[in-house]
Each structure stands twice: as C-alpha cells, then as structure tokens.
Figure 1: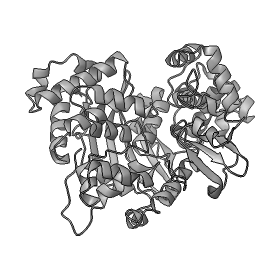
Figure 2: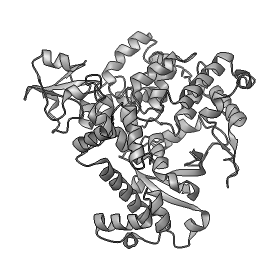
Figure 3: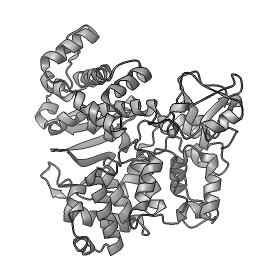
Figure 4: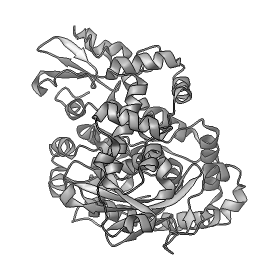
Length: 492
C-alpha cells in the first residue's frame, strides 16, 4: 500500500466501506487505527498505511483502544461492530426494520443475537437501536411536515410510527411542540393535494454535475420504465406491493434534488428516498475525491473540468445487474436496445399519467422461473440467457445481495462465479449497484486505450494512484477520451 497517502482521502471521509481494507499508523502517537476511528484526523505527513493490522504491529505501532483494530472485517470472530451499526442505520433509513423482528433479521445475517446487536449499536453510536430508529423517524416526519401538504396522520405512518398517538407523544418529547406547529402552506393553489403527489428535497454537497448524470442515464434509459424530459428524470417504482412513479429535478439554488412522488408510495418513503440517494450518488464527497484524483497527471485536467462528477448508482440492484449482463461485449446502444426488449417482454404493464411510463421492471422472482428459450427468442444469446437466469435465481433465493453497502469483495466473487459473468461485469455492478467507490474494471477497453493502449495488468498498476476513488476515475476517463484519439465505445 502506498505510504505517501493514497488512502488519506478515505481516512478523512471516515467512509465505513473502507473499514478492514487498510489500517493507518500515526507516527506522532505510535498508534494504529481503522479508517473509521472517531479521533481527530492526523496530519497526512504523520500517517503510514498498512494492508493488515499485523503489518502495522510489525512496525511497532500499538492498537487504538477506541476503534479497536481487532474488530475490523477479517480480524474478528464476527464482523466488525462499526459496519454492523452502519448497516443497521442504513436499514432503518430504508424503513426495513420495524421493532424486534427486524433486529432479529439483521442479527441473523451476522450470526449474532439481537442482544449483541443492541450492544454494538449502543457502543458505536451511543444510543440504542430503538432510539436510533426514533430519531430517523422524527427527522423524516419533520421534513414531511415542512415540505409537503400530506395529512399529519399519513406522515406519522410514513415515518414508521404505529399510531398517531405515539407520533404526537414522541414529537412533543423530542421537540417540545406539537407536530402541527411545523405545518405550513406548501402550495397555495392546492396543486399537490389535487395531483396525488408530494415533493421533498434531497440535498447534496456541491458541486454537482446534474447534466452529466442525466446524460449517463439517458444513454441507458429503459423505455416505459424510465423517461427524461428536458432536465427532469422520471421512472416507475415498485417497492414490495406498492407501485407508483417519481420525478427528480435539480434545484441548484437549494443545492438539492427535488423529488416528486405519488402518494401510493408514501408508506415506503424511507426506502424510496434511500434508493434515490444511491441512484444519484448524493453522499459523495466531491471535495475529497477531486483532491485525490487531481494529484494524478493523467486525470488532473479531467478533474479540473468537472469536480462535480458523480457515479450514477442503481435504483434496483437486479435491474442494474441485468442491464450489465445484457451489455457484455456490445455497445451501450445495443445493450439498451436489448434491455428495452427484455423489459417489454417480462415487465408488468401499469397505467400511469404519462404515456412514456407504462411498465414496471421485471422482478428476479419472475425471471428465475423463466425458460432460457423465452429469453433467447428476444435476440439474446444463450450464454447471456443462462447468466440472467442464474443471477435472478441467486437473488430470488436470497443467497446474493446487490444492495448498496453489501460487501464488495464477497459479492464480486459471487458474481464472477455465476456462468457467463466475468470480472469486468462484476466490478461494474459493484461500482453502481453496491456503490463501491474503489471498483476498477481493469479489462475495460476504453480505459486501457485511453491510458495509451496498456494491458489490463498495467492499467491495474496505474490505478493504484487513484485509490480509494477508482470508480470516479473510471467515469472521468469514460467521459473524457483523449482528443487526439478516436473514441473507443465502451461496454454497458
């Protein structure tokens, strides 16, 4: 690992996705830590980076008593406390935990008891899972009260409260006021109530290249499921049994994306907003990413031209992975044609107020039961059909997780083990569906050619200077081919 600080950006960001990937020794204290340690970030000149805790101890660094390096992934008998706590917070954010049963489900994923889960969250965050859940619910309720005209009762249930009485009590205890005090006129003409939709905002850290994100998505739009009209993105939504649509537009003055959603999706609002944050990469730190990538002579001009670049994620892991598999070894345009054909054949028809939105995306459960011949007759070769069915079966059976935050190394290996899915596709899925910022499809022909026609091995070597933000480096290269060379059409 580069001792000069290639991982310093990840250390500054305290991004839990890098926990266990590396350790940092601080020469001024003689202590080594995990990248998520809560202590003040040391000066870069005082940092030494190591691939393992053992390597740090060999250089006579002592383990930190606060972040406890022995608990990092791959070092403890069970997975690390911080990552489990972060996952629980993410599940709560998405509305997937509801009382003790939800905690039991999370605990089972890590082969822990719910009691251990409670102890981990208390130790890492200073509050219990119930208190964390309550805080997230109240913050969402506060946003809905101030930004929408939804009835208070609907807001209470959308925020995860089981009754209006409990909502009112929790609000008075936490904020010392009744919920109705935050109520305000959102739309004077009552447009929101009449249209059956509401608008909330999702903020980001500027700068944000909205047009770049739209251009990326526009090349890959699946007809009837997605639609871009001017500077506004639309798509149909299926969350469990709930169905509806959303639109997303940019509001630069507020440094936010404005999300209009149908009230049919209100019960799943936390999950909806969480997925949109992933799709539009709203948690990125453009300042840290640009600072790191801008050090590289090859990327410097690209980064300077677009410091607001984002890596578009995925609203649904299966939808994105399916698109990636269809796009193997063909152009983006050809892959989009196949994806549209596939959605038309296997997606559920639905009536929406916009004729451009008339279908829901195919589900893994449906595709898992589909015959290969039914897929092949769409013009998709047999090996791709088998890959798609194997992928759908793994997701339907619950043996694979393509949600944001899933373990990238484990999932990449799982994907590569499926028939017909290679390392390039696995890394591309990790980049977008898993939101892994350090994914690097080293076999990508556009990246290799734009680096001077280098081999995959050499591309991997050159990419080490871009860590831990290689996903962003790849997108910079894709969007900025050398002007002196003919642009290479990339896959997917």
